[in-house]
Image 1: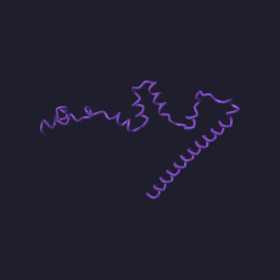
Image 2: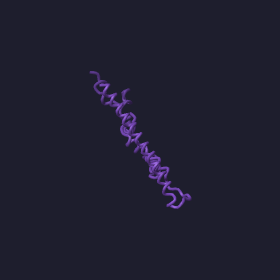
Image 3: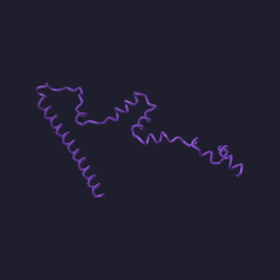
Image 4: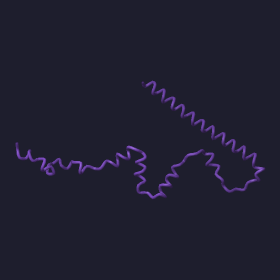
Length: 126
């Protein structure tokens, strides 16, 4: 055998393909971690932020609850005495609650229809 082929493993760094080793390849771990899990991605995004910034973003992200509760926040205003306001307040509250319940039932109905349609598509596809 030739001297060059026998000692090629000793001169690995001088070979043309030596630049393509794992030592010089870009690190793909962070890209993989962010795409693998949404929790990891959020955690890596929040790495450089302060605690106050994280809490502010978390508070903005919490957009749950019914609209009725958000609208009925206590605000200072001139109001009649409790005895005079009982009837209209009760009626307004009951109407708003009935509307809120109707919206929730409608959302549940839509969700049930979507799952039924998906089940039908799955059954037809098999």
